[in-house]
Each structure stands twice: as structure tokens, then as C-alpha cells.
Image 1: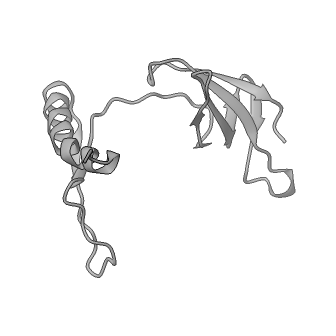
Image 2: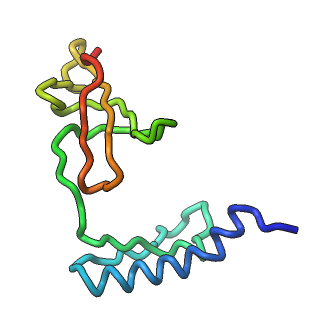
Length: 123
């Protein structure tokens, strides 16, 4: 019987995590944040995902702080956005009855070097 995707991920994730942690620690001043569920947490701790390693690599797009990107068949990411500015168009969610949501496309293969373009006026 072939393993399920979840079984396959459980088998390889610890190795990938170890390799990523080792590679990142050799090249960046990142840090490891261990998973430490609070006492009384109703969920069992994961045996596979024991923490997250932040590599200190990041982008600084300044286009908005509320984005929910989703891939499309054309290879781009499409997202609503708010609380920022894209191509000179501003959108805010904190302005009561005047709150708006913009729409944008994120183009590129390098997450640290994407082109972000507004696709429609905020509504």
C-alpha cells in the first residue's frame, strides 16, 4: 500500500527541518523558537514539528499588512490587501464606514524579490 501524503510528510519533515536549521545557522544570525504548548493545552504536542527556525531572511515590501495570497493557474499569486499602499493606491481597514480592501497580483518566483501590482481600485 502506498503511503499517504501526510505519512510521507511526517517521514521527511524532521530531516528537512534539521537540514534547514543547519544550513540557516551556518549562514545567518537567525533563531530557533521551540514549540512549548502552555499547560492545559487541549492538543497533543507535535512529534514532528518541534519548533520554527527564523533565518533572518525577509522581504520588506511595505504594501500592506493584511494579505492572503493564493496561487492561480497562471503562476501568479492573487491577494486582497488593506492597510497600505500599492502603486500609489491606498486602502485602509480602520477607517469605519470608509474602510476598503484592495486587490493585487504578486509576480515572480523569488519570494524576496516579487513584483506587486494593484489590479483594481479598492472597494
